[in-house]
Image 1 (cartoon, rainbow, N blue to C red):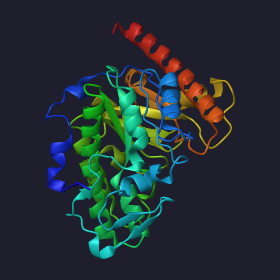
Image 2 (cartoon, one colour):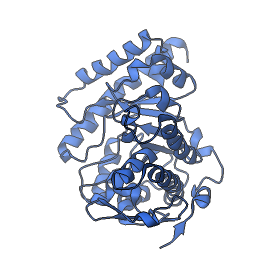
Image 3 (cartoon, one colour):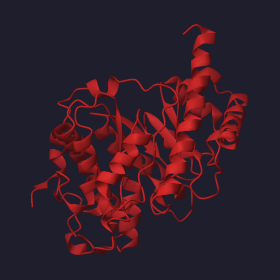
Image 4 (spheres, helix red, strand yellow):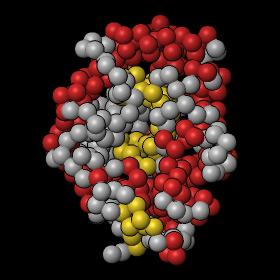
Length: 355
């Protein structure tokens, strides 16, 4: 199998040094999703997404089809010194775990990337944006550390692997769906432990690691950073994503000044307004009120209400792999309905200010 060394990563990004793909604006109130679906057939999953997310469809991952499509297995695939078992677990050969070693399967040809390839093939010719996603380096580093690598080597290897994979993902999108604007999220649940006293990496280094992966993605995409739980949001914002993604109730409302500065710089927030771990009902009213209440708290803390509405997206809180297909359909429907209310409010704001 072909390998690519870390120094070659920039040659794979598919952008030729251009920022053209990053100039496509995202309209207010877009709905999209966070990664996984419960389907077992890639084509069916892609059709499911495209029928329900017409403005910003998200490439799904299908860990129920294959555990190799789970977050950690995908991220660790092709890392020298790491054997990814069929059940998605990791076995390390520590003598081969080297942050300067080349990454196997740089073109994402292996089984973990089957569904992403089907998605990109299907959207070929699309001129509206699509959303892709990959596991972040902090989360991969924690997995390697838990599997037996010392912290220093685990995070160094993870940083190299994710930066190289990010470049490969951009190149794959350029090959299979040339000219389609990209939004690419790093999924970093590992950042929820950022301030824990036993976290194996100091917070500033963790943010630098994440920022390095985002910098590769910036060559050909709008970037997002998703964290599924409470963390030090002031520090996370410093990683430099274009879009900050978090479930409601994870603490963003506690940092209104930092969030306002992020929005003033053109940043956006993808609000995980539809829970994925509790009953959600069949109508969007309660979910809309919860989002509105969060916005009110932020405005009272100093956030600009106009910018907040104009630069908001709506997503489910997390992935949907553990749901049934009908449950996933309901979550997607409610996401779209709440997003429509955000869009209507943003349109009203624009009219009221003469924009």
